[in-house]
Length: 273
Image (tube, rainbow, N blue to C red; front, side):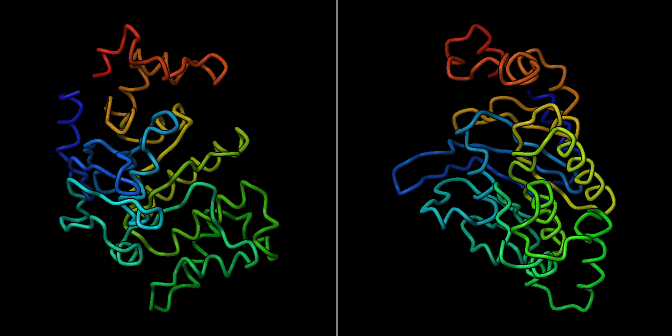
């Protein structure tokens, strides 16, 4: 693991999470001292089973813990060298971080255009229409949808949620399960667009995803979480070829995938840590 970490240190980190702990309702410890780096302009992915703390990590960065009676009680989160630990969500958006929530969270009784304009609510410039056209460049299907957003398909709603994030002109986007509920064909399309936005706009991305194969092929670096801790990290290529990753994540589908529930007693446990 040490050798893999050194590879990220050669690039400037825009986001640094340093040994943070997160507590809900003042008693429930969810994150247990995790640290990770997100290099500027890169896509980094967080993998792990349900309940590992992936979404909580994103909410700790975006300031949304407060909406769920959670807080960072130890450690620090810095963005571009400045602390953002426990800051308000609107302040963090203005600093350049925008989160695309799990489940899309679009406003269903607003049109596509109104949803996109909502993403630009912190802006005061005159180029919002130009950026709407830019979103339509990435998601041409949305240009054809003039009705209420609630009538969009699941894939179109995910496209709209990502497009709304682009409208904020962020330096970093946090993506929580962008492939959830999508067909394999749409998953491939959405991830292709995520790569294009990253490469063409230079937007840094921290991605939480259950589709490990797709995420590792999209990301330059990856962290695997387990029970609120980082259990494994490395480049996307390294983890695609890692024997434990193959066995627990890349085995060809949920039916054949081994459960993490018994990992503590599994003979390969020592290789993870």
